[in-house]
Image (cartoon, rainbow, N blue to C red; front, side, top):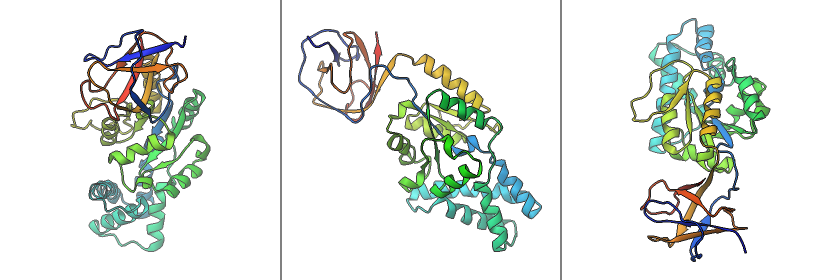
Length: 316
């Protein structure tokens, strides 16, 4: 007889064991093995890996003064947020150019074309933080897939990684340009799922900005705030683990995986025709691949519409 695990949806979402199968439509967007690690990939904001202070140093080296850098960076992110909200997209290279024009005008600085190019190129000539290279190697040695998830335009990501000789440290390059938007737009974060082919619960997100950490957490990524500059946390109602560098992120990731050991995440699934007390049958050879008679179904919002919910299975 085929071994089956029967998943019963009944109010509390606790499942019974062996029982007669019922016919239901179960569509899986992605399959999952019975045993799998909690986290399979890591998406990084690029500034967790590269020292953004290189932009300030470039401004001082070229212009001999620093206040313009703060205005430039602040306006750059404000422009990205405004364009994401309004849908009036231009790529990040254009944002770098436009925000520099604003900052120069604000500070009464006239930029020649060579000076402008020297300043703008700072974004693709940043140096890695001291702990970045060794931590990336360690994470890859643990079998994790790595990818930047950045607002940078695609050729900016390529140029930056080649400049730092880190092109081969990553398995994929994810630019929000693919969705013609910017973080914290959920469509930007969703690129991690589509490019890596994994549900968001299995992609850890390392954020540089507190606002980005909140955005990634709201989207559903297990998120860690790499607070390199020791800035204050955002007042957005989110409690997010944080630390000063990627070594702290790596330690947090180890704890997270240990705490979630044995849990099988099914990713995004769509269930049709499920009612009170209905039974979902997961049998040998099906995409779920469950072979235990007693399991517990964890449902994000019991009693709600189950279409496109995220589910996970825990052994009992």
